Image (cartoon, rainbow, N blue to C red; front, side):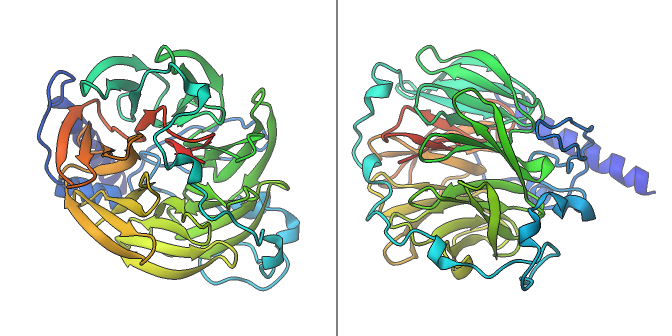
Length: 442
C-alpha cells in the first residue's frame, strides 16, 4: 500500500506539472487566477522524487536530500548530516528547536558596529553602471519544469527567444561584476553562463547542485547553495576553483542575504524553520535563528539592522536581528509568503503571497503592510524595474510572468513563458555590483 501511495503521489505531481504547460503558448497574453487548490496542497506537502548519489568537489560524498522542485522535502536529514559542521561549534549551550549541533553564545562584538545608512544607496536612481553600457534590457525566466530559459523584451512584453539549459533551472543570477548571467541548473549540476550582450548561453560550468547562487560583496567568493546536499559551497569567483564547503545540518537551505559589511551571510533553511549565519571570511557556521515553519526568501533592511524572511508556512514575514540571531517580530502578509524585493526608493518591501495570488507592500519605517494587491496567478520571485514603476513576478504554477504597476497594483500584462516559471531576472539593473540570487544589487 505504501508503494502504491508513493506512485499515486508521483502521478498526481506529473499531471499537475503537465497542466501548467499544456495550455500555455509564447505568442499571447493570458489572464491568470489564484493558485489552484491542488497546487497549494502540493507546494506545502512532501512529494517523493528519486535522486542518485553525486560526487562532490569538496571530497564529501553524501546522499542528497531528495526534493521535488527544490522546495519540497521528502526525507529527514540523516544523523551524520551535522558531521560537516566544524567541531568548534559542538561545545556550548544548546539552542532550542530541531535537533542539531550545540552552539556557543553569540558574540555580538564580532558584528560590525558601523553600518551604512542605506545599503541600497547605489540602487536608488535608475542610472546604470558603466559595466552594462550597451547591454539590452531583457527579462530572463528559468522554466524549472521545462529545463529552458525564456527571454522577454520588456519594451514589447513578448518572448523573443528561448533556449534549453540543464535540468531543473531555478534562478538566473547576475555575476558580481555584472558581465555575465548564470542559470542555476540544480539537478543538472551546472551553471549555464549567458552573455547579456547577446542574450545567449556561452558555456556550462560543472557545479554540484546549484539551487541558488550568491557573491560576497567584495566580489572574491561565490556561494553555491547546494540545497539537496545541505551545504553552502564557496568558490573563487576568478576561476571557479573550489574553496570550502560549509555544512548546514538543517534541511532546505536555499535563500539568503548579507550583513552590511559582507562579513556574514544569513540563509533560510526552508524545511527546518531555521535561519543560519555564516562567517564569509572563515567560511564557518556561527549561529542560527529559529523562525519556524517554511522560511524562504530573505532581504536585509536598508539600515542593515533587520533581516526580513518570507515565511511560506506562517503566511507572513519574520523579522530577525542579524546580530543576536533572534526573531524580533512578525508581519502577516498573505497565504504562502514567498519572494521579496526592495522598491527602487528603498522605502518598501514587496512580498509575493504565492498561494493566494497577491502582493503585499511592507513599509520599512513602520514595519506594517501599506498595500495588498490582488494580482492573480502564483507570484513567486519578483524584480523591480530600473525606474521603479513596474514589478515583474514569475507565476510558478501558471508558467507565466506578470507585470504589475507599482503605483496602483494593476496587472499590466501577463506573458506565457514555460512550465515552472521561477527565478525571473530583469537585467541590467541599477547598482555597483550583484550579490546574487535573481538580481540583488548594492
